Length: 193
Image (cartoon, rainbow, N blue to C red; front, side):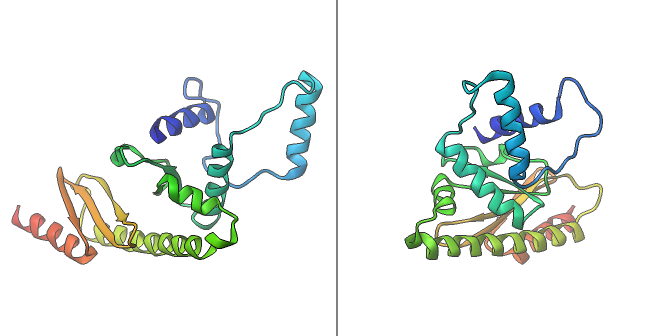
């Protein structure tokens, strides 16, 4: 589902059927209040009060979390996936993708003081994961070359905070709880061939 939403949004933003010149590839952050007011008054002038755009609470919640995370990680797209979603089909235009569960989305958007500790813990785990994925990316690039086909790599974080590393390189899947062990397996396979 997230992949469909991403594809639809991208086609709308890019004008996939009709290229329209140079479009900024990284539009980030909320628009300014003055700009929003101007747009609303322009809509009101054209369509009157009957043309109002209201977002569902889920959309507002998602937007709030995306703003929060993209202010901190401007090189990552944010997606929400359910337990049955194929995570290999989710990916964005930026260097990394942060994929949250619906519960994590709700927690990050919560303003309830009783959720603060758990929310801070999740944000700390995301920080740790983003640091590790950057290191993992460097290690993979150090141990591969242009002849290698890297189709996917990343980390999964369990509810317990445990991190698993995975990669799909040259048609082979690698997975381990240790980044170094995974890279060692990759190097071992490359030297065996």
